[in-house]
Image (tube, rainbow, N blue to C red; front, side, top):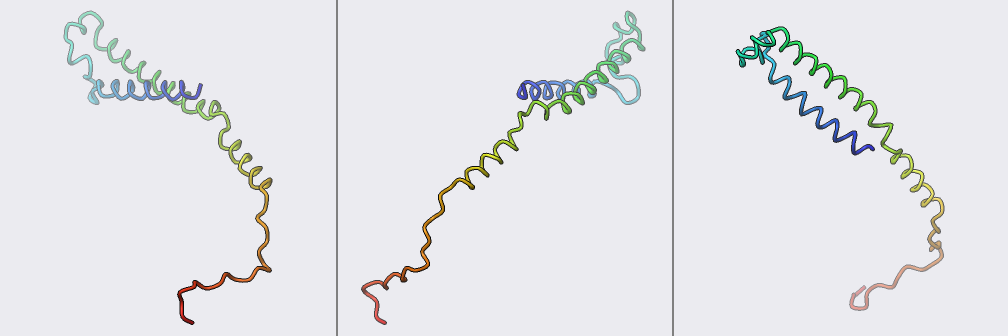
Length: 110
C-alpha cells in the first residue's frame, strides 16, 4: 500500500508541475494559446478549470503525503527491537583475563 501511495504522489507531483507550467502569471495562460477554445468556453471557464485542477492536485498531494507514514508498516521500530533482542540474547565471549600473552615470533632477536 505504501508503494501505491508513493507512485500516486509522484504522478500528482508531475501533473501539478505540468499544470503550473501551463498557467501564465499574468492571467493569459491556456486561454492565450487557444483562441478558438476561448470562443466556445470563454476565458474565465478555461482559467477556472486550470485553477480547480491545480487545487485538486495540491490537496491530493497533501493528503497522500500525510497518509504515507500510516501505511509504512512500522519497519523502524520492528527492526530496532529485533536488533535489541539479538544483542541481549547473544552468548558472551569467554573471558581471557588469565591467559598469558602469546610468545614472540621465532625469528626475532631480543
